[in-house]
Image (cartoon, rainbow, N blue to C red):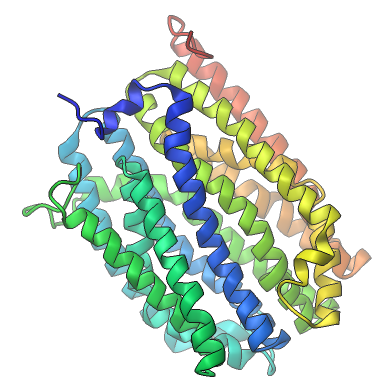
Length: 459
């Protein structure tokens, strides 16, 4: 007999109600997580200075690489969990939880161990200068030393959401942001810890979130929880996790490569402040909107995965179409802010006139085609949620590597710093077109293979 909190309601409850129940907490959680990075930039810009912001901008490729390994495990594990629950296989879902936990700890330690000895060289390669290297190094050293904390927090939070506890996942994100907002000004301003204070505030906030999430899975009242006899790695489950998680992993690796090229071009044409304008202002604002759509995706993911696993395709399509609609609205609102109010946005981060001028122009140009981004992100996530990892990987790679990187390499030769900004809306158009072609193909394929099922809307 299913309880009210049973995840099997994903196959029976009204889609609109499920989307609201799962997506709104996820959206709030992802939004506050993104705000948490933006808040760091604001405190650093106001309390330490413009070159400290540029130092944070230099760390962006490395941060993307660190996040990539976390997403490889956490998104893969969350997706597999929801699919297994759709198949009502609670034993394998429990096994996934334990494998994800072990992998997060091991990989978190390995990433830090492989990176710290070469941190100076890495940051210099990523665009640091004599002015920005001290800030970038101090910040990243603390983040790397405590990396397993962040991995366990983020990874298990995703699994918690995918196993039916979207509201608790939102609370953990809110908890970490509140702690960060309280501690960052104390550490930066009151204790005069500078950029180190921003890093330690981030770490303590993640520790609080981790304690909350681990406490959930220790509790035997949770639908899926830690059990004796499951703390061992299983090759089959690891392969499934890595296969599905490969798409977000490659997306973040490509983001790392893209930002390396981007920082190189910005340094050549605009110097340290141009790097700071993108890494600590423009990217923070773009990611704020993208993370809202990512929250929508996280809310959709268990619904899509469960109904795909249960072969309830009409419910799956209805969820996807609703997600595309909402995602487009979200990115259109972002477009309005970026194109019509860029000056007001960038002044929140810094009082440096030169930095603000570069950031304002860059934000306007990069946001020109932003309404298309929502649908592209949702469709890419759809393929990931139903376990079609190869297509998801291809769509994930398309914007960054096929379209954006060539533009970043070529256009600055003709337009200088503006060429970097122009390459982004061009890649948005191309990636959107590519994702729509992929969607049309999978829609026809599933409908053809299930002719007796209404693949569009439930009555």
